[in-house]
Image 1 (cartoon, rainbow, N blue to C red):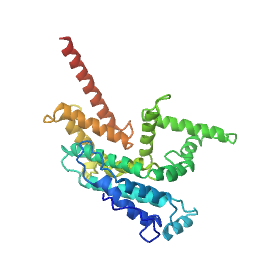
Image 2 (image 1 turned 60 degrees about the horizontal axis):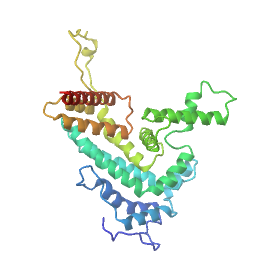
Image 3 (image 1 turned 90 degrees about the horizontal axis):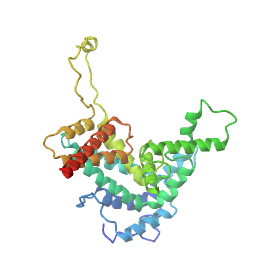
Image 4 (image 1 turned 90 degrees about the vertical axis):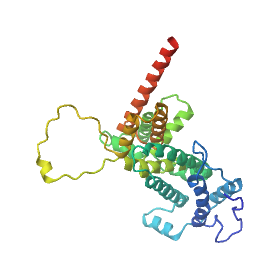
Length: 335
């Protein structure tokens, strides 16, 4: 990113501080640089952003802007006042969705190479998402934080009220409902590996997973926003089983009783790719473990729940492999 691209403090139509449209025009090249541009780093590390540009974006983001008339009118039509920051947040969501759709479209049709493609693609995208999260820290500190305070975050009061509706009485106090909300939050965090008394780092990881697992209408930090789109645009379509159309004759045909149990046949595209990787003879065990570990990490990061069949199958395989390797090591040391 050229250092000459800096914020112009003068008020003009090109000044990114004047409107959300101008700010987005200023932001998008930087996002393309850190999210889309190729990286030679083996871990997919995003390219650095020029400090002058970083400062300019932060300054422009923190200044008041005029919302487009369409945004104000649509918000008024819904009976709500326009929310500052929502325009850029919505643009970011659309941007990450477009990038993820490109990743999905470029995925190989060959299931034997699908995991080999997804793991580095996710690493590169995730690295860019983290850089964007730092670049747009103002969005997190002000718009996202305010949205969470206004009950528009990944966990909402309605989530608790729905579970309490059958047992709720007129005597239930605000404190009781608030306590139930805290319990609900803790329950969700525990699903992602958090335990009472864990370190702040473990808590942050569990909360990030909860954010990415949330529906797309929930307001979450920029990094989680990006990871959630990787789930909805890349992974979830690959988890779906293809639809099959049967004939009317097949519906009424009496199936034959199999002589033995049918072998495991995963239906989703990604599940078939994982099955191929697990059983392929032409893949070294070290490479197999590396790819499965990377994919398992990415599925957790983007909010695919721990009880999903594919995650459970992969975790079981990795646990068995690790146990087998430990046994072999112990036997070698004892001989």
